[in-house]
Image 1: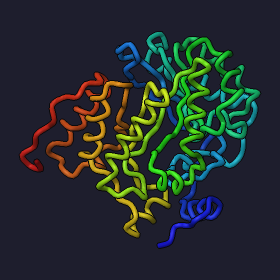
Image 2: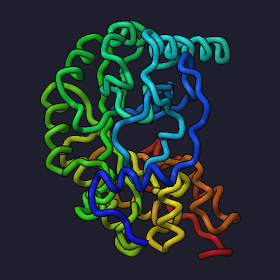
Image 3: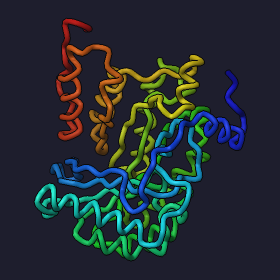
Image 4: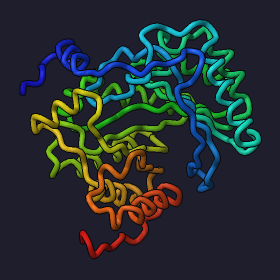
Length: 322
């Protein structure tokens, strides 16, 4: 199997291997969830994550499966603020109120500052929905970090945290992921965020394609270190997976294998042990990376505890697999 050499041809190759998108209602977020997350003071704070429904991101990243929950057109005026209001109302009805919530994540399967996804004219209405939150976290491509970030920062009452996908500092792998960003561009975006009194969160991939499995943990460690060098107070470590068509094709051709639970544990033990910034393991669908049902529950709980405490617990021993 030959993977294309140019960004345009890679984008076509990636899109050609997709399945149909999920049907979505532009007046509703496609999901929301409540979670607790350790803050910079060491407290576990209650937060709400809203997964907004909007137009698909213009970038075609090789590993991304978020396009499955996007639209092909920009949402109608008022839709994004309406989605946020809907989710807040659902939380109030199902959980008895919003008083405990201190932070909110607005994740939109792309870039919050992409005007085709989140129309800039809605920023004031969106900000008014967020008045009660101490911290507002949005995600964006590094190329879109700029004046709109500052204007949105000024509209909200809480601290703005901007999440950027670093993915990896492996030069060949980063280029082939088709994200169309360099480490220099990431660093420049991070410097802009830090210089303008916003917080930085980074996303790092564990074992993306084009990094040999035997080297992937080391590259994940180095990528997390780089994110913290750039000022990230939070780095999320995400195991790379199949499921978007393109990654399945690479896996079938022997060009990609999903990481193991042990690799995730090794990378987390190192990065949390450094105690430079908070590092959170993405625990979604974690069982797919485990080969031993006997010890998986305890190992999952260990990673969850690690996320909450930012300490390195004793490893789990297992007579079945270790």
